[in-house]
Image (tube, one colour):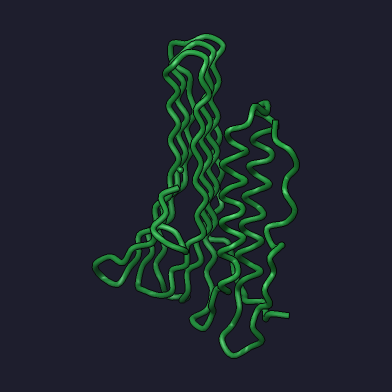
Amino acid sequence: MPSRVPWRILSATTLTVALVAGGPWGAASAAEGGGRSIDSSAVAEASVPGTHLARSSLDLAFAPGGRWVHATNFAVAHSTCDGCRSVAASIQVVVVRGSDASVDAGNAALAFNEGCTSCESLADAHQVVLLVGPRTTLAGWVHQAEMRLRAELADLVASDLPLAELQVRIDALADRLQDAAQSALTEHGNSRASARADLAGPPAGPVP
């Protein structure tokens, strides 16, 4: 079994009133001054009557070092047409290695209907930042779990589920991504994590 690494949640806010991926570990890019900027977003704007527009983002980012980390995550859903629906969901988990790093995290979601009848909007944003020690690594097998969960989220937001049920299932999927990240954390020099193809859990069941 892998060695479990101490961690703590720095930011885990969800607002209900999204992926820009730059590689295996998300849209993390080096920036001036020894820091990293990690940005995720999902924006859905429905403007054609009777349509259903869905956008999703799921990002597991690993910041292996640096003096600072700036992480932003947001979801926006906007409907302006009769009988239409917009759904946006953005889920971001950031693993920051090094207890001395300065972390600036921001998370927000906004959903609104404008000038329309029988229209719906749902925006759901989840952000978790895990601070781990300087000798911690993230096992490579978690990338497969991330890709599977990303595909599940895309199918989910495109479904015709009622908004209340849809939000519950998005929230559960966000928890699964966080569990995957925590399970993949291993301290250097201890036993390595074994491959777990089923880490993302069984499929969430048929989506209408």
